[in-house]
Image (cartoon, rainbow, N blue to C red; front, top):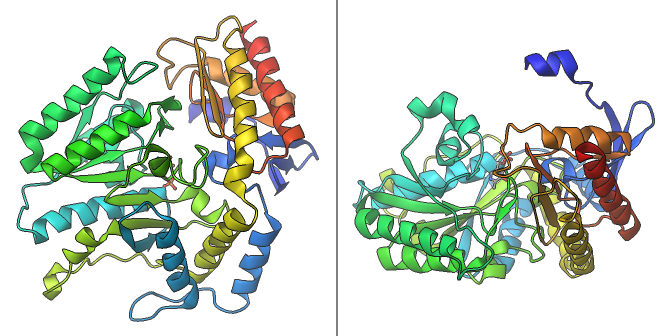
Length: 416
Ligand SMILES: *Cc1c(COP(=O)(O)O)cnc(C)c1O
């Protein structure tokens, strides 16, 4: 905070459209991270603005307590229709953190209702990020986010993520073994394994092969542990498929959605659950899930979220991402050659460079690149020593070229 007060000159943004935002001085910036991974359809998509205005004229808010409305009901149906198989129920909340919080509470209470209350520990990956509430932060494996609250967090066992370039590598075998050993010995006390599928975003865009997800699914089945997949970042086309889970051929027991859920227009989220999870809450009143946020199923958010799905269908967003993703892959592979770049990787609409070994979150190198990129008209917020792009999926080809050019020039300027 001290440094922020002393040094930071924040961009004061006045308006935004597509992949750009404009500051009060009339300068424009390409939004390299979709404003924290949220504005996946670009800023102020005209159809989303229109859907918001239309809904606002009719109904802005009503609780989902003995009440429903068309938007919440239809959205639930539409989500279930395209979700990975087995996910048949939808619980609405406000943002990624609460979507995860809901999943944790559902898992804990499901085991209680099933007569196994000792199953209350969670398993997550080193470097995991699942949100900011105390529950979601308990899963977190980024030390600086966790340390101040360590004394009050829920019990979570962290296991090493797979490391290496391919599932045959020793780093995968180690990760498989660690998870297997943990579940074999401790499944009686474990409620769920929680994973960011294919990409650990906040850890520095660490990517891993789908084989690990399939392995985790098989182990969770064998030991009857729930698998929670947090698609808050990866969902809605980011990895080049609608869901990273389906890209990997895996269906979770609970799936968390937010960020792209409402296309950068509104804080709203959902947790999807299987029939098995849902059924555990039937019966006597004390078995019910007493949990509801005031904005649960908000009509404005529901209208926008439905329009997001309509845009994905009608504008074939996922198909149109493929050539753009190929462009990112090619550009980031080439940037591996820049002196000082330690590693490069890409998946779907994500490209990342490590500027140091270990790529520390409190590293300074990414911020040097940030300064250079800002001069050149791009907002390229790093994750410490990791520089990455995760632009709107709809970024026009010429703007994507411009952005990739700015990344390369800025990295060269900062490291040169
Ligand atoms: C951002 C993020 C969250 C938290 O979402 P918020 O909307 O910021 O609360 C949870 N999980 C993952 C994987 C995320 O990337």
